[in-house]
Length: 66
Image (tube, rainbow, N blue to C red; front, top):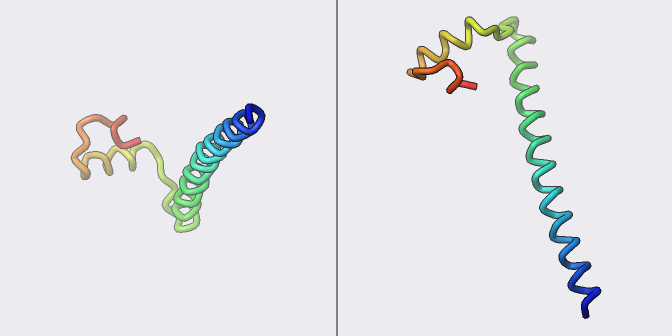
């Protein structure tokens, strides 16, 4: 009985680690694909463009955009 509980706890922990890991990997791939689309379109983003975009969006602080 005790070994089943330990095994179940380990499986839950591994599932949690996998969910977090794949979430971060998904966000990383999504970010890369956005940048790749910009680069292929010849619109490689630079800080000046991001700053103007933040002004258009009404972000009071440049760091709020990123």
